[in-house]
Amino acid sequence: ELRENTTVIVLGASGDLAKKKTFPALFGLHRNGFLPKDCRIVGYARTVMNGEDYLKRISQYIKTPTDEIKEQLNDFLSRCSYVSGQYDKDESFQDLRAHLEDLEHGRSNNHRLFYMALPPSVFKTVSDHLKKNCYPERGIARLIVEKPFGKDLQSSRDLQKALEPNWKEEEIFRIDHYLGKEMVKNLLILRFGNEFFGATWNRNHIDNVQITFKEPFGTEGRGGYFDDFGIIRDVMQNHLLQVLTIIAMERPISFSAEDIRDEKVRVLRGIPAIEPKNVIIGQYSKSLDGSKPGYLDDDTVPPNSRCPTFCALVVYIKNERWDGVPFILKAGKALNEQKTEIRIQFKDVTSGIFKDIPRNELVIRVQPNESVYIKMNSKLPGLSMQTAVTELDLTYRRRFSDLKIPEAYEALILDALKGDHSNFVRDDELDASWRIFTPLLHYLDANKEIVPMEYPYGSRGPAVLDDFTASYGYKFNDPA
Ligand code: BG6
Image (cartoon, rainbow, N blue to C red):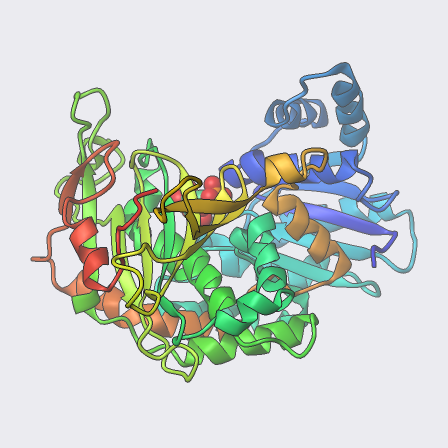
């Protein structure tokens, strides 16, 4: 439930994440009546500015296409205030505490939700200071943290250890924003709420699964961060693996956060580390018409960087349900389109009456244009027995045209306010996911002679991609 007497404190309030995601999401919640009535929102960052300038700045983060929304924004701003301070000084955090106490008017029971929209370098010091100087005396404290959660298993454990003395697991909310996406949240319902999916959801009927993430833009000035991480750490170890986990997990005993997360951990533990032979990596070069820069043309990227901006790799799950079924994960920047989708390809129907009839596919489009459709063979109407591939199509825009799909961050911040951990990453889950990726990442870091394959900005990825997916059994019998 939502608690009155709650303050949300956004640390890193002038940073990129706060601007693009946190404040717009808080505003979305405000506008739709989801924030507790008296909920205050305090920004904290190093930039020195007065309250008025701060409110002006937040207003720029939020789009106000109508007068009604402008009005709502003014209302929202009346909840907001700002404290500037350092990330490593007691006095600064004492200022923050004094400000919080002011807003709390001497009430005895106050809840504080700390949202760390901060770079990993200050993660430890800020969480220490929050505990020491700003932890509420009586109410509930919660800490939202954002990726990157380390760069490999060891560094992720180090980060965990840094939090442990001060913050209990039940107080920590690790965001993987893919878990807040409407279609990702729908996966459990699709799978476990439909008998016909449940019955075929295994190695006897499913030939291969592809989870694809494509973006039509490159690093565009964000190369400094990106080059340190690469596409595998940036989106595969977290976002795509989360999707895989929910596709593959067993039915949880209930929808409670711990029951769901227990099953997620269990399936992750059945996944051996990814083998380098099941991986291809790529890096984008200039677009064919020369109008878009290559990765190495980005000034924030070190010259000769071998950082992958594209990767396709295969994960196997060693359990009774999935043994032998390849889960092909593909992710890339600077490709031909924006698309995140899950494509489950079923096995060939028994041969005999049909020759080369296309396979069934279940496609779950996470974004854009959320939809679920099944590719199905049907008789082409007419006086022959010719078949055609058709679709059973649930496109959200058509079926749910009057319902708004919430932003992932709105859903997740609301969950954190309610104290629901279902869509956040648990510590053992994080460990299990790094264990799957760490040997591969170390192998790529150590073998600098492995040069990513070039692909032009705006293309579908490296030329070998289709042969790669085909070699794991994917049949392009009906290119979508
Ligand atoms: C972030 C990555 O976690 O996810 C970005 O750091 C990526 O590189 C983003 O662009 C994708 O999120 P979405 O919601 O736009 O698919």
